[in-house]
Image 1 (cartoon, rainbow, N blue to C red):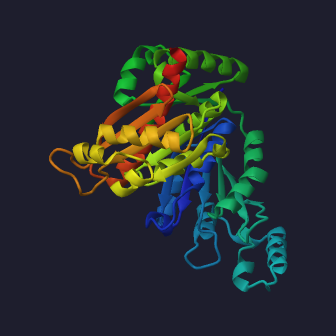
Image 2: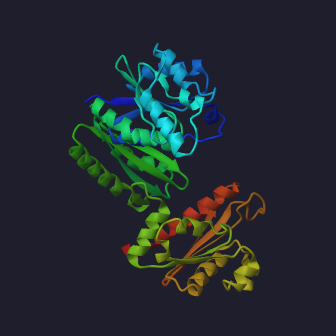
Image 3: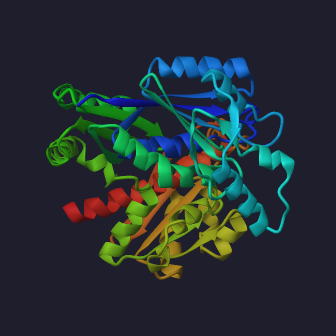
Length: 419
């Protein structure tokens, strides 16, 4: 079965100026994939007629479906509708259903219909209107020389409702598409290049209709297997087989399957084993606790965090010995070990973790430069610490440290099971 491609064009100077973020394209890409339509390209263009026309010409040369969002408002800078009317050599004509919809919308909100908004009910005569039940700008469906063009408002909730109610169902009926299935494998603690080396032979042996993508992000790499085929059941079986092969190659670095963040995967592990955890944070300033408690239901295993930023707090609340701080300093193996052990005892948990470091951008020394960070893990069997060396970006140092602690807990629990 032949692949069906779509292109997405977002219209608006506000996107190019960085005043708003284009979230529409990501959502549309996800939903199109679900029905077997592959996105070929995403393009953002200015509110300029020639720019929009060029984008339309380029898109139709590559794809069967062209989706346009934005530029359908009632003001003079919203020119998409007029550009489309010229592009398809047609004129604007009043659509009675669209007029009724926008009139009812204004009435329900207690306003009289303005002339500007009445003009939104005038649509290119050659289009099929797409109802907008949440806003004033109707969508437009054009068919031209085997291509389908759909123009929708840029307001996300309006666009999504139109896609779900009308556009996606019509695409499913209009196009015969192959199945596209994704499998996501989450890894942590291994750089992309090393991961690629370990998977090279397996990746080379993949069937042509199955592709692997490396998607690195802060602290880890998402692996996405994408399979395309006419038989969904057979394709699902093939992908599961390949996931099993991949898992056997890097078992210690995989923490989840699917779109699951590390803190959620760790939370599931803690709940499954009936374990509780507490944190003693210095350089992360509560960010570690934030990551853990961002997961619904985390109260089942997370007891709390002590943000001991100053040495006096480390001593008074966590019981870190003054001689430890004097001899080794706050950023040291000895200090984080005491922090992790003591917070576990004080909050009466199975596990205690700790962070202490120089997040930056200043405060470093020749012996302990910015980015020098110690983390620790403690449980009933003992405690261990790990030295991290990051960079001079404060926020990245904080985020990397929190992820490193989460992974240290994950690794420690897995080692305990293996032993």
